[in-house]
Image (cartoon, rainbow, N blue to C red; front, side):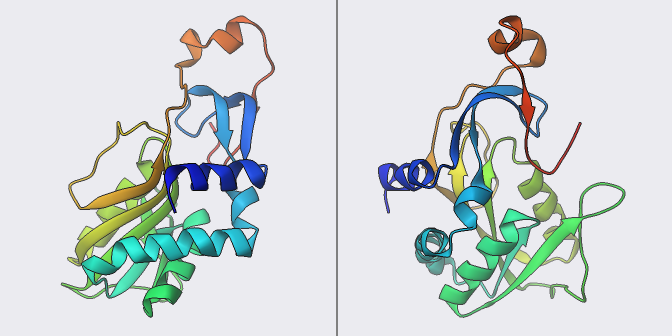
Length: 191
């Protein structure tokens, strides 16, 4: 699956939205990738996860970890393709991530981290911190879509199935605010 094919899946599933959006980072954008519109469609989601698993296979992960919420679906399906288990890193009450539901990692265990849409990397960095607390070995990271235009990087091998340039402005610099266009806030983290 190449960049154009993945972006076509977003467009065909009505997951590429245009308007005025407040992002999880607090910035404003004229484009929003509504991953859950895409993830709710198993026939499309599994194509994406098959490609992610193919890209991660070379790192020989023993377990796949994804952050809640979209990362749960991706981790499960990528793990299914790789014949591995999947566990989920949930938001901790005091910030960061934690394993619940009896999940844990073993020291030295080879871990691949997967997530959906990368903007600031906050969720992925939280999962990295959590995995490192267990002294497990992060062998690779897989992302469905990088909307940071490559501006976020990690100290581990990683890939995004596609990288896009999406406008993102600080609220005080947002031309859409200046034009008094109504703003919408999507996503799970509210400010």
